[in-house]
Length: 232
Image 1 (cartoon, rainbow, N blue to C red):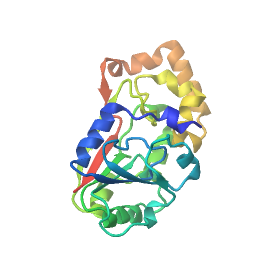
Image 2: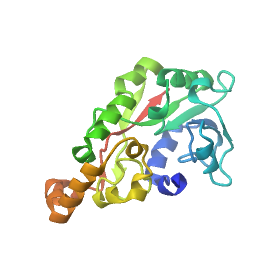
Image 3: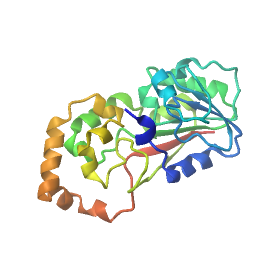
């Protein structure tokens, strides 16, 4: 799977993350993957446990250290800020990972994550997605329990979002029928989607999807459940 191609940072979401990082000059990116949303105008240190993801980082990207969130190889208060973008659901021990981020960070911790209580329309066709979200995504209350006071804001997903994360195609439903597009989301790797895909294909052909979700087609952006969590 060409993650770097399918998961191209959306500039509107990037601006939200950049603003949250404030004036930080040294930034740690935990679960950095292929490098999405790493700010180009700051000193970035990337941490990623997967060699395959590290290999997909573009030339010129920050050098990635092969390590996990739960055991960061840095001294206390090493960075002005830290970030973790759509990655926490992959961490085996989320509380330990966030505690490590707090330990090595002097300033804000910036997280882009998903609220598992939210139900974007694809869960109507793929109820397994909701089950996966509930099993793997921390609840919004977990972050304050783990990090102390946090500010949580909704991150709207543009209708033409360039980043192919799970619910990015909310106004482009036919995209979910594309094997290549689905390969950009780890959730589809973890479930059998055939029944939902068959139903979605029928509803798109008959016009039933458009009738059911007609209000979405008038929106430029959508609350698909993504949240920015910032701990000062």
